[in-house]
Amino acid sequence: MDGIEVFVNGQARDCSTAGPHTSLLDWLRGEGLTGAKEGCAEGECGACAVLVARPDGPRGSRWTSLNSCLPPALAFDGQEIITAEGLGTVAGPCSVENLHPVQREMADRGGSQCGYCTPGFICSMAAEYYRPDRSPGQAHKATGTGAVGEQHATDHECGPNGFDLHALSGNLCRCTGYRPIRDAAYALGTPQNADPLMERQNRPAPPTKYTGSGSSAQFRRPKTLAEALRVTQENPEAKLVAGATDLGVEVNLRHSRPPLLLAIDRLEELRTLAFDDGRVEIGAALTLSEVERGLDGRVPLLAQLFPQFASRLIRNAATLGGNLSTGSPIGDSAPALLALDATVVLCSLDGEREVPLSGYYTGYRQSVKKPHELLRAVRIPLPLAESTAFYKISKRRFDDISSVSVAIALQVADGVVDSVRIGLGGVAATPIRAFATEESLTGQPWNAATAATAAATMAGEGTPIDDMRASALYRQAMLGQALLKFHAGNAPALEAAK
Image (cartoon, rainbow, N blue to C red; front, side, top):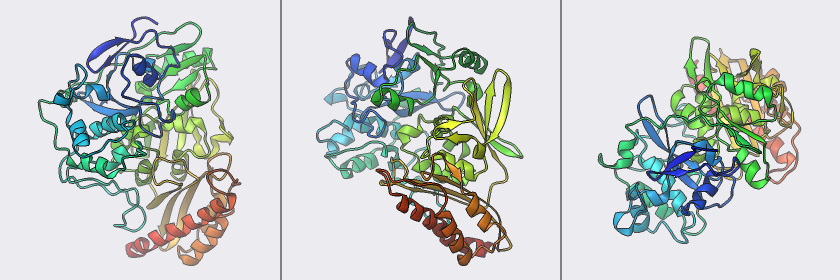
């Protein structure tokens, strides 16, 4: 592939010899930039984090931290990347005399020991350092659930300098411990106006380059949705690539080698976010971080979901379209969207069709989507339910895979359940609606007795199994407990609102 170049630390580097399945990390290390490391090869440790200039409005850009072990290097044709080596001077390797403020604080406060994870931490920290809306004394926005004023475990933890510590939730350290790293993050000041990386955010991100194909294995970036649909019609075996948070794992750990990779993450037709009188439409290729910023809390159930979805590094790349298309029974977005009564828009050269998410999945990682179809958008009907909650049961609070996930959307009128939708993950071969529980609640008084009866029904929903994450009995118990917890958190607020 000719004419492929990536701008790394201010310098153009030829990427034309990289194969379609060569990760950005492997390509960078092959270029001698060995600060980023491979720790897990599946986006869980953050040792491979780098900064990428991404669009932020029509005239600006935002330094965004990404796991470089997952996406293919060819997806960054024409894009700008900063590695830990380039933070100090941008134009070349930093030195002890010219450390970046993030590097200086990490060194001064003992934030590094063996050093393996340090470059990744520094890149994630730098992305938060340059976050446009970060300011000293910034009050965090509660993403709480349940009773009014209740603080949920997913609330952002911000330091006195406005640094959101959850920006580092995807970076793991096994020897130093997190206190000195947190101290370094909270000691950071405000970037100077003359800081070249700060100034860079005042200009648009690089335009997308549209790439042709190779010989035996191919990587293509279509310019329009129509072109992408033509390619999928002609090549039903094509693997669609957006954030590559699932594909990268398949390539790295399972040695998958799809014959054709089709990058759709920059297609404008898939990057819409719109409200109208009857619905919210979210483009399938918007990253979860972009959706979170765009919604700005206007869909409370999703606002509760986002902080619990993997890590910031993953949310900066992952998309709703990818998470739903993967069809994993433990994908976190599906239960929340089921509770919101969402539909998905499938498109092909023959046109579009809208399918309720509750009828989308037909089996384990199987759906009604045809090989030549593409998931264009997710639609959420308005108005939204009055009370919602998302519960994720996992071994770690953050950056972990669900054992069980429960999403609830409840509407009560005059003390009686008017409508309720409950989405479940981790208890069947697909994400499911808890229809039996919904039926037992609808038309009943919203009180402790009703909740207890419905909780017993909910414990029997699905077909949970024993695996490494949890036993079937534990999953059943958590289903019932989730509904009891929801009632305990929402009954006082609903009583006060009557």
